[in-house]
Amino acid sequence: MAKAARAAKVEHMCTGCGFRTSRWLGRCPGCGEWASIVEECAAPGAADAVAIDRVPPESGERLSTGIGEFDRVLGGGLVPGAVVLLAGEPGIGKSTLLLTALDRLARQAPDRAVLYVSGEESLAQIRMRGERLSALSPGLLLRSDSSVADALAAADRLGPLVLAVDSVQTLHVAGLDSSAGSVTQVRDVAARLIEWAKRTGTPTLLVGHVTKDGGIAGPRMLEHLVDAVLSFEGDRSHAYRILRACKNRFGSTNEIGVFEMKGKGLEEVCNPSALFLAERPRGSSGSAVVAVMNGTRPLLVEVQALVADAAGGGSARRTAIGVDSGRVALLTAVLERKQGIVLSDQDIYVNVAGGATLEEPAADLAVAAALASSFRDVPLDPRTVILGEVGLAGEVRGVTQIEQRLGEAAQLGFVRCILPESNARRITGAPLELCGVGTLGAAMEALLT
Image 1 (spheres, rainbow, N blue to C red):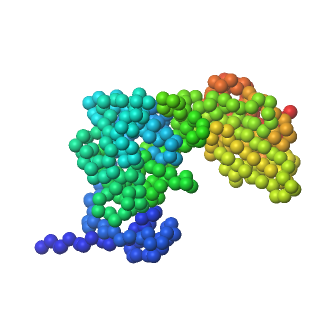
Image 2: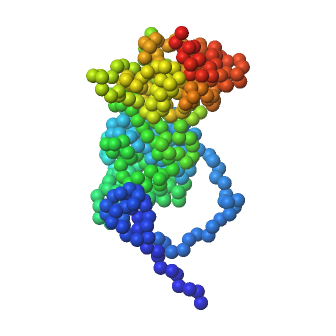
Image 3: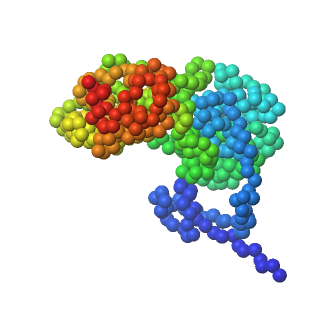
């Protein structure tokens, strides 16, 4: 006689960070929140395990959104069944980007509907934005709803090519004793949307709000549940926007997409290097240009440095925007020790123009050159690009993907490159003049004399 099925196992989980424990606790050890541990019942039994070589491979086909910069950040397009969270500050242009992408998706597949569920705007409001963006494809279906069950029921009837929800914080699950947007509601709404996407193989786009400190609103586990988290960033007082991936299970997190907000919507910026260098001052000290890699794309950005006497003789300030402050401190110490440039009593400000970020050590030499240029008040050659990692002994180390960086610099009119000696020896037929350096001292001599 078969044994009776075992009872469901009782577990406890934090609604804030997803921490699991076998017993109830007053305070979550994971995130430190009080009274956030709730009881859950795990389903008895488990599915049989499958040998890895018996798992059928996926086709790997991606669905293009029709927006090249969007596809680049996604890793080539939308993967079947993928759930993508698009986050950003209010008014930054998330809904504009989403509606534009959905319209182009609908035009690509006239035999399949694209469903856009909005819990924030009425259908008339979305129609008004669609007219401004010229996004009025008949295959783009709209639904204004606040119930996730009703939204998914409509999606089951339509079988859409893509489902979009704007936003995940506005939908609710009936029967829960909490309002829409609460931690419990956001978690359960997201869980149902993700389960539906995986079951039907439908790419699903979720729009998420951002809190005051820049984090995504709702439980932290929401970021872990989805397949990709895209952040849409920019200053609303400026026209340019940057789309970057904070997480991507199907592609690189180093790619960025650049857009310009215009009267008729977002326009792709196909040459962001020219954008970042458009307002670069000529004949001004403290400015250096470096070629960095964002995934497969080389970008030329300007590093600005300002070195000034500490105000009132007090402790010196160190401010870094777009570059790691610890890296700036390291380069400052190397300049003092190896070059005799005393910066301990100087205020130091380092900024990467255009809102770009420098996350790879290949930008070290450019940061050091900008600091030395500002300290000595000697402008650098505006047609020179600078590459190289700086070690603690003052050596200049090689960088990767050097050919792509040099090619981008040559296309933008640069004629000379200061780069590591190890890289210079291996390059033949370079599109611009190369000056290989092995030490920080040699680099400063080539740049400042």
